[in-house]
Length: 96
Image 1 (tube, rainbow, N blue to C red):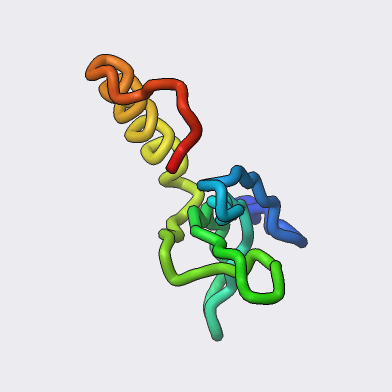
Image 2: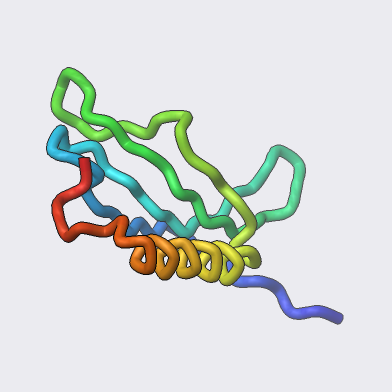
């Protein structure tokens, strides 16, 4: 008999500003339950854009994957960071 995976009662967001327009990139841990399916813990990386009312709202620009792939995502972004530093691509200025 297997142990039941924990489910998150609420999404846990980690956010940072993407640009001066106050768009936000959100990395969120959450539990997704498809219709008639089992709950899946996911990590969602998504662009939130400022709407006309001044609220950040999610856009279709992003990716969701099983939280089991989070280490792979971390490894890939770490490699990208090291390569960008090696190539001198990071100049210390604010993003776009």
